[in-house]
Length: 356
Image (cartoon, rainbow, N blue to C red; front, side, top):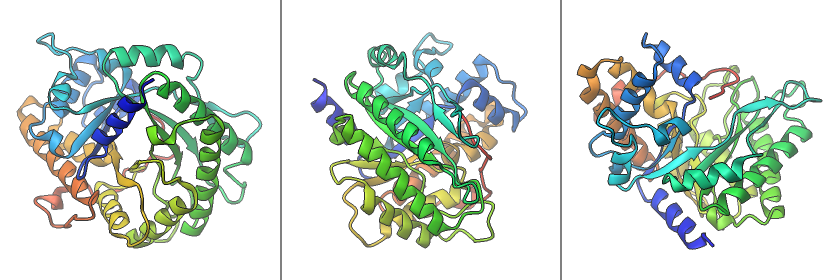
């Protein structure tokens, strides 16, 4: 019913030099962000910040889609205009976070499964009517080699739920972004991360096929394959590229059109460099490989803004710079000294057991 429209949406999202701005932080998570700049987490401040992002002149040059939190999709500005109106005006596709967070997966060692599937059909219809054209659902898995995590049960349950979510979205006109995030918490090696990524992605695509999901109408939002952040091994972006592409070649069907990477807590600079190396890596890569970054696009922007209206223009310029850097990286053309990239946040944005 929606197939042609879904493919058109994917083509808009996967344009060369463009990617996704993930601005779907929950009320609690954006409160943590605001606390870092001593700003109160009020509805008015959330609107002010997101309005800063969405009204950035030239944003559509490198941003093709924005993932929203449910509140934002219906929010209005002080002039009674929809908060998302500037995005629609600039042909930026609206996306929506549809999962309801994680809950314990009992019978495992502190592993989780994502909730929100029961009323998803009804909510997807509402989001489509509000103008959303793609969705995102995050599953969370963690590596602990001593405890043999992730367990087969956690992998299976999250893969099944991702497949059910994807099927529901497609039948309601929303492109499903499938996000099986393997946290970078831990001391594991990049080789261990690679093997677990292969196991997880294999399970996810097996369930997508079993649930008769049209892969042409989906996108994948994975982590990059990298060593654990608590280990002693320094991040090597060329090794990240090699292992990430290899994991995809083993598991991701060629009919799946695009990969929109999460940054997973890497610094702004590391996330851009790694994406660039992945796109430069010389091997078979039949998918569009771009970004769907939240923290790695917004960290410096938030710091520059500081909650002050006088800083809006400077913060928007920072957002444009980060978007341009990642736009170039999505084509393998990033130059590290581009513009004012020395202002990029070089510190890790990692949060243990990250939720949002």
